Length: 146
Image (cartoon, rainbow, N blue to C red; front, side):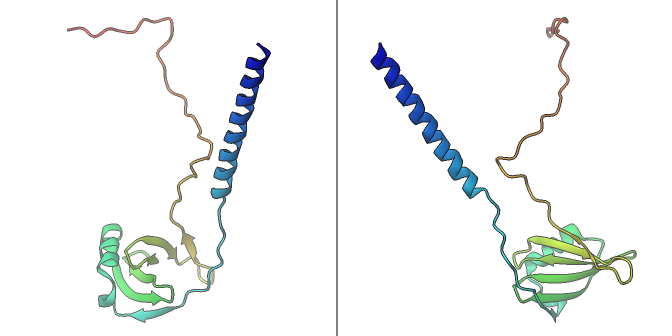
């Protein structure tokens, strides 16, 4: 009987240690890495030189804007100046047409407002539960009638 309890305890401890190792590995790999980036410089190019993927992304997202200028960044990204009747914005895209961010002109002399793409929460982030409406317990569920 004692041997069975000792073996059970040993297996339990080994199982907990193995689980701890898995969680430790997950925690290490989920930490964000901060990478220093050099300042990107942009050189103006012809609007006709924009890749088709960038043109498609612009027409999908900014159909009511006109491309006024285009620039190629030292990192291979594209900066596109877009205007419509009420505003002017700078949209940034990768060569594959992936949206990176936008900048809109703020008040005169103010730094431009920057809109970053929305990021998804990490897989290990706590999930907020939203309350759901449930039928009262004391009322019987209605059965379908045929």
